[in-house]
Image (cartoon, rainbow, N blue to C red; front, side, top):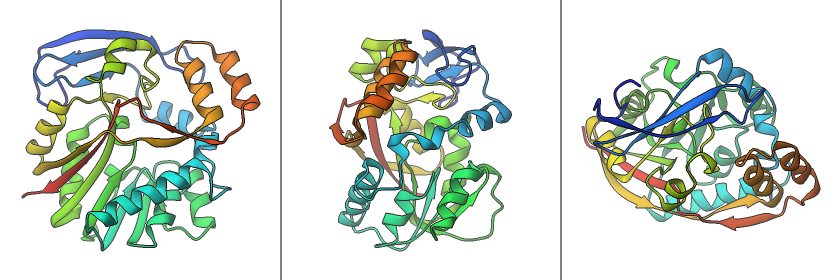
Length: 285
């Protein structure tokens, strides 16, 4: 185990271990938490080729990612998020990182000059086919074109990066002086995470490599020129069949999970297990 990717401490403790739920499910990960800031990190295979295989293996085709129906959960969540952002008085240019097939960018265009970047070429191409401005490629490899944004969002994305400090540093450089950064992240210090450990549904390496605590978020922001100005544990809409499938996958019942994914309708269910935080950072330097 290397030092904590947030605070740099070498004092860590073993939290749990598990095999990835993706592809052949034969890659093992050990999860450690930092004794100083409480941050959790997954140690195991996480190379670009492996991640590309996962994201091209139907990752964006689950019912939770369905963009064929404007009443689908992904659109309901997108519209609620846009409404929340505008209720804070935010406006101007917006960049969505990890934009998937573009549901949030599409919704955000009602209130912002919005665009996105997405690792999966397939997902980005589908978004562009619907007229949504999504670039494909690695956000961290994106060349600096001097464009600045008022708002940058990472919905359920920051946990997938190997180096969250590098992500925030790049976001800081792309934001205006008083710009706002919004992230949603899995909270390893939540009751659910501490109780379920390896069976926690958000324990899905390497899609999630980072598991945050309130303390690690504060440290992360401060080190990279941000002030944490908002912390919420909101509910979100989840497709019922996706929820059932994910619950059974988290305990290793993959065949049953696949059956439920097909048998249960995809109607939206409001869910809040208080283990996903929505965090607002304001650029300070």
